[in-house]
Image 1 (cartoon, rainbow, N blue to C red):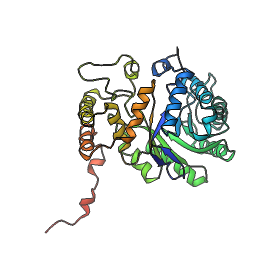
Image 2 (tube, one colour):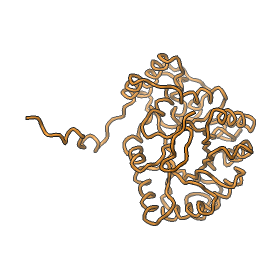
Image 3 (tube, rainbow, N blue to C red):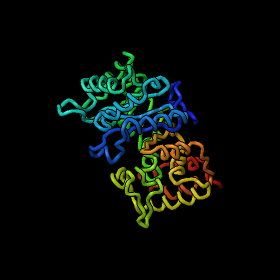
Image 4 (cartoon, rainbow, N blue to C red):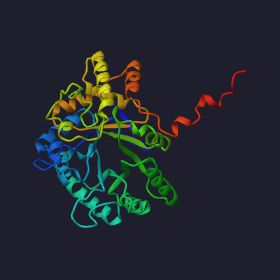
Length: 340
């Protein structure tokens, strides 16, 4: 395993992290489609990941309505000390009007509930799951700051924020002397490169760690699907069409992935994850799995060194359209004097 610094902190995280969203939810939609794994299956995956050097495990209170955290808490047991445990909050967890969001009231309750379910006295990385348009960012940050000062949280981060939203939080932290986000968790794949426009450059500029979810675009880039109609009916993408993908463009990406994979005699999925790992600014890639063989294959991506030709071909076939105002900005060469 390889490790990368978590933003501007002194903590190092494994370049591949284990996503626990497949844990729990058997018999309950949509979680049964995502995984529905019981405690025995979850324990096997956690053990495999830890043995491979993974030290970051990510979950959220909403996964399987809390059952995911409960299973993970039981499975970790005495292994908890060597794990950087990350979870998230924001989604509705009850029927009451305040059982949702990023208010001080809900953060305080949600944190205590996660600590109980995870059977731990602290969360290493506590992340907001998205943006709450109703709660002032100062209120959210103050509550998270209190949690850090109380020793219940080590670091705070955010997931699924636009660049302007993250900047609003960072500005409030600096202005009011409150705890600062150290990381962002975002969707990034060959089929979804939106973060390259503003979100990723912002993170690099402000020394935020970038943790990537769904590097296989929900299984679309796993090699189980092609333009000829081949598909694995048991795969997550066949059961839950998420995240959204422009299929016409994505088929060309899958074809190129197959060419590159054949050169290295590895799977399509391994190449897709290796491409994300090779992107500047990416700290760690979060992978989930239903079976040990899937996880083993995903973990192997950390040792796959793509060549310059591989990267150039994958970059070209997946390149997004240049949006406004990017196409009318000055390039560095524009500043050079014209030749006489």
